[in-house]
Image (tube, rainbow, N blue to C red):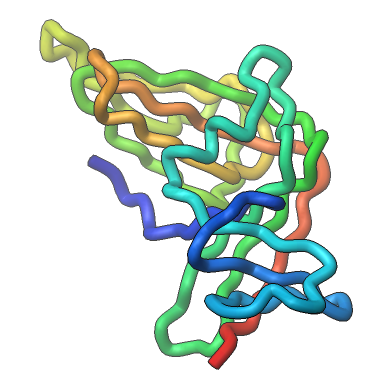
Length: 166
């Protein structure tokens, strides 16, 4: 379907079996005790992240961590999108969708970000209406025709590096 990499998504205040804990200004991924955490972010299935974005007003409703694991390192890298952040949303529909970008890509208005195949099997370019950093590419394969939402932030987001607990 695309060149997308595997990302983990954590949302502030969500119950889960795997968490990221903010403690003493450090973020740490943990699976155990949440004691002494000033904030917790619970892991959710990637596709559910759309529940934490106000689609009508294009605003993030809870802080979201998007992380990519490097198996050879003892850390995860990614970024934090703060609650209240304004985002640009672009819906893409088609029988098949092929992305040319992924999370972390920088795009400009007018860039070709994907191709989609129509019901008549025509291949069409998807031109970006957004400008900034791609923070999420949410695929919804259960929709007919297939649907995806591209989430781009042009404002503030923080890059983070998170340690893995033992």
